[in-house]
Length: 280
Image 1: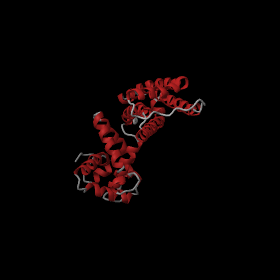
Image 2 (image 1 turned 135 degrees about the vertical axis):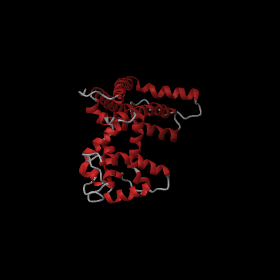
Image 3 (image 1 turned 45 degrees about the vertical axis):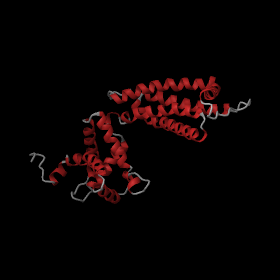
Image 4 (image 1 turned 180 degrees about the horizontal axis):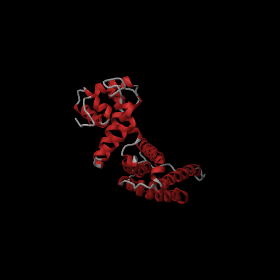
């Protein structure tokens, strides 16, 4: 484990990873030694309690299902390893967690699609199993993922992209946000550290949504932080003067985390007539 203490959200997620590692390991053993009973048992329940629903067709006497069993066991081994690795050293192995989330998201979505198209109870059982696992893991991972940095790399890049669009080099000030990027992001992290966890989570979600603004305001499949500077500036101007109050307020809330750190730099403070040495 790292020398610096884990924050509460990291400790909660680490406990969940410990539970998950044992849960996936035991599930893999169940698949190996009793996997054939799962679908037949669900079919029996479906015939008894939901006779109008079609049952999942079972294979004949040929052991064709063992081919897919191997693939299932390999997936269970992989997500068991990821859960155990995240439990042992979350900050080092946390980069593996999105793979676990992707696995559970895919299984949940395909169970949903197959149940919607076939109506078979076995797919609904799969959805009600993997769906909550995905949601719990995702809900615990989001606040834990940045660790003691409070915002992750993508959110920091989005703030920097906003700051660079607001304060370009050679614009209203000779020096731009890009000249103090690391210092500004460090100050923004301090601002996030002073928020309540629920408020911090809401602000991070706003940054994430804002990063997707080109998708629904420009109909372009690109994130805000990937746009060229000129297009970022044009989009910020549109949002700042948008007719919907919600869009303007969301931008104002995020804008504070770019503007306040920038004007905390002595060069920017002097440019607007503030003397840092005399506090005038």
